[in-house]
Image 1: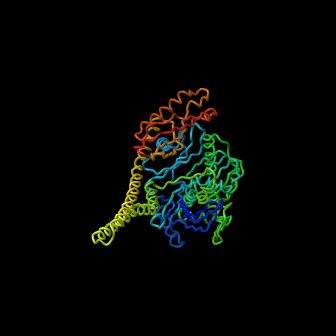
Image 2: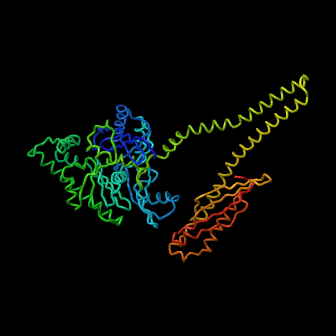
Image 3: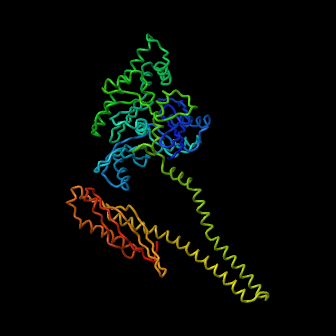
Length: 555
């Protein structure tokens, strides 16, 4: 089983949490977990990035963390839209998604970094979750990450990661479930059913309660945050008859009513868009979910059981981690969801790392291999050079010997012939290397012509391409290219009996003729068509075509 070790950093709105997670087989182990609270005016949204950058530097300096890391940004920093596109092959999907997304987001597409996740496919339409973030925000964020000594190998959105954590923690779960993750600035609502999931982010979180308290008490936001933690925390600093207790309870009740209303609105929206059943169970997560009475309020209004979600099921903790386990459960859901992406079926996840940074990282990773390949290529002429140098030395020696008359002429002649034979072998080796270099450009042009033929034919793709090389008795080579692919039969939707098989065969013959137009192909065999899948009700028609390559222009 595969194993890995990753550094995952969750950059929330109120704290930054970093975890070193090791995986072996199907299990996860948190080897190190540290957290730094953000210190900034929570009412000033522009102050969050500098505060995140400062927290990342503290993590790097005080906890000796560095290197490659996967970053998670909160749901309030991304735009999430569910869109529907026609069922098409994956190669054309990105272009359609981009077109549909542009009609549904308030920004020009070139101003955002975006990715998508397929959440449903009924064979007619594909349901896609479109997730985007402002490009300038991501660029600034990457700058702070780099300044702290980390290299971002991916930027994930917290919006969808709870789906992975839910599958990993409760693998046997088959009910319709609503997971509510209440953060500082926003709340992620994840609807999970046996067919997939649906997400919604609402701008209501723990800071909303703080702002309500600040407005009611006439205090600054920071002081109201301290009052909130003091009163609603585990160590309540107020007595029941305190003059401010009733006011704080009123603020809490108002927050719970708003949360309950938003949950109801989200359930209605989910059922209208997905046509699914109402959740039979609600799971709570996030530190905001610890507000006393919230679970009972939601259970009463939604008339379903409400429990706290434990993402640490099936996860082991290193003995050096001394954080309270209840606190860990409330702040590790997204981290576990990112860590187990490759371990759960149909995992959710996007990467909002700009393509320019991804390309630069890919080049850095390939640089050692490129250097090794260049060194090997530079050494290719060395044997030939050494052979020629050796032959030249032998020839020179023989000339000297002949001129001096110290050796018989016959012996000298034999040595010269041996040297010439070595040079001929070296020359043939060089010619073979040059042939390989030339055939590389032939392959590039040939693939371009294949792609053009498929583009013109439409509804056709290739699954396999094999090369058949044969050497005849007279030392002549013959080449054939066997291409296997499938044709999308749109008429099959109305029943296999309505399909015109002759027309399909003619369409494949036309594709074969297009292949023969290539300057590298001299002829081809008739397409071999497999009608089985079409007769079984599938709307695809497998085929194979043998293309005979021109020996004068070998591949």
